[in-house]
Amino acid sequence: MNYLLDTNACITYLRGKNPVLLQKFGQHPLSDMALCSVSTGELRHGAERSKNPPAEYAKVDAFVARFTVLPFDEAAARVFARIRHFVMSRGQTIGAYDFQIAAIALANDLTLVTHNTHEFGRVPGLRWEDWEVP
Image (cartoon, rainbow, N blue to C red):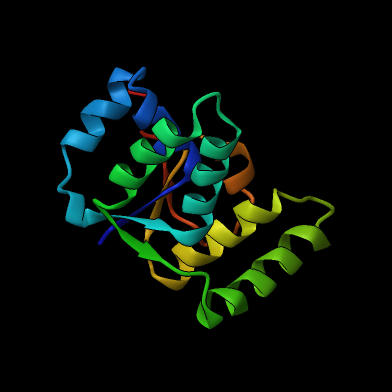
């Protein structure tokens, strides 16, 4: 694995509306990409809130089944504490789930695929790529 997909990359892929992102997905084998339990939770929450939860759950479940799903484990928790302290000590913050996603990427030495570069750019040592821009 080389990449961890952020929730926003997954949503954009599932909606199929960004040809640049779809092309980038096609350039990498699925075995190079992973999801994390935080993102799968966010995707399922979106399905729960939709007008047709059973149909949306089916889409999410089929998508998630294609990838390895990494947990927010003790190694990630240690990274989470360090990066949250670093960012917040500078008077900045990012979303709580984004801290967890960044920690999972760092703990597993993965590059995060995200369009949320403004917030994730605050995390020291995090490698990221935005697959939504050429």
